[in-house]
Image (tube, rainbow, N blue to C red; front, top):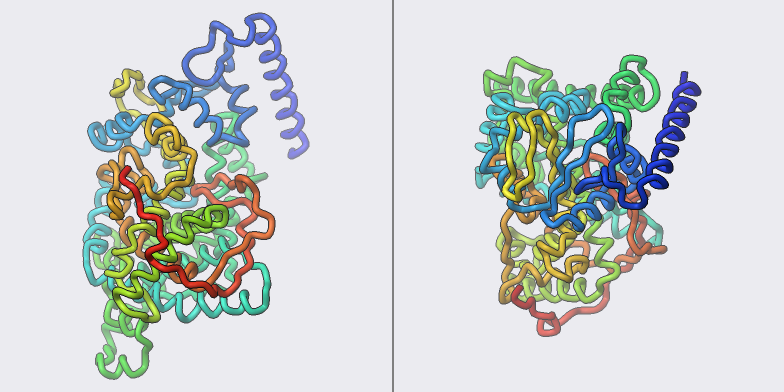
Length: 535
């Protein structure tokens, strides 16, 4: 059956290329049947162009959007409704805020990811989403969670990350920094959100299955033949068999977290240890975990009667928050460190800022919340890195009823509309002529970080679905970045001009990020730091 699939695929591709060649010869390089967007042909629409550019989908859509006067294009493919793609901030605000109810995720998006994410918050609409959002919002708004999260990050850095990096540095071995960051982030999200410690800086079969599930699920969005993935799923072959196998592993692990949390809650109800006795048995981070017992994210969902009776929904909540807490921060940090290796002046400025923080607050093992808050240049550098390499590069919505976007683009009922955060970070119309440059000082006003509209910079989404963990993500990223930069020089053995990516649900570096480390010797005077100019 696999051979037949390959044969028919090659035959179909050859047929489409013949059509493309015919129309190029008959109509010239700019056929009259094309419209604003990808080059289109009778019957097949823009399918040929899509097939030829699918492997570089983000770059292709960026090129199309940058050529459009409105930063919006419309295209259609054989067997599919039209699809609108935009990088226009006014359209993004209209879709994510002003006309929010008209643009849910929709049945197509949800069906693509339902096997993997189920009805979790990031794959839900309507009341299902609202209930989960409300429950999670209450937890993320508490100061105690921020304090707990910072304590967990500091504990992970001191007890696991630094010892690992010291070994790598002293042994002069190469290490995949992206892999380390993913494991680190996974430990953090499990501790903070679920009250469990997977100690994942070692090997963990779950992570391999989780990563493959995210990659294969994402490719459903880029299918050439609509709904063909459902045929493969029904036959349980090819990529759909792999997804099924990986999702099974993911579900078993997530169900285990839910069961363990139930057991922990029951145990605490029956035999609650006194705080003084617990403090003698637990470390500083673990003491706070004990104090937060029952207050973690999954416990709040369990306490809500609308969720507590549904183990399946609790499992989906666990998977969604692992995806959000692990993949996004590790993706952002990996690209950030990669960018630093070819921008030594940015690294020098960050080092100088760290030294100034040390001189102001004193030398301690960790950076506290106020210290991290005062790292404006580091904050700007991370933000600039995510502008060029957003952890979630695109997001798609479903139009419920006919609408006209602020730039005049018509969107029909049932159409898909996608905003590309990746393309938005590369629009001269948004960022100016130096849009392609990595320039953190564009975010600084007299040395202080100055944000822009989330509709111009939708890295953490925007509107009612704005990322709840945005502030915590920055705390985690700044803690890790400051810790590593202060202690080590990072070298990449064979640095490429633009390291290729793997188009997953998040933007990962293909092949990881192999690095070597050398313990830092020099000290940068704060006065040597280049002041951030007004942007």
